[in-house]
Image (tube, rainbow, N blue to C red; front, side, top):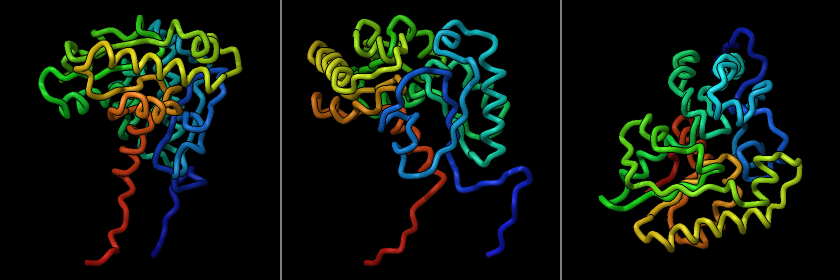
Length: 243
């Protein structure tokens, strides 16, 4: 086989490029910001001085920085681009046009698929960092989402999650946050038995997905399921078995 180098690219073999907010949070194993969470290599870029607060405020500095760092990832070989904040859904279309590669910025992009999996009247339960920020207008922007079949619960009043992931104290108590997330999920399903699947919207939540599933016994989607799904579309397994 003959290989040809790409101009300006000095390392190879990456599919997924991940744009990271400028945060002060420990990215524990299972978090999308921890490279050991993936059985394949990923590329990272930090968005300079772009915070969750700026994204929520629709700050005009967000999109240019996304485009700049997204182009760097594409130049370095990334074939699809994601990011670590579900509220970046607002920038999905503009970044996709600017980069001309597949872009999937928000875990919420899984929501239409999840609803199509269910029967009429059955619901998706969403656990988000801040329920005040995740409103029906954002969900409607995706199209094909029945907002009447969505139940949203936030972690803004969960003290350990708030301290680590919103206040960004620099310290994270994994066991305490896991209990907070599991409690919210369990209460949500107990109060509304029509909930048949769970979406962990926040990028900090994949480390707790198994605990949530063990508690509620439902399918659980998160950022990691989305990233693995896209990666698999680029890297199909060899079929060398036998009958």
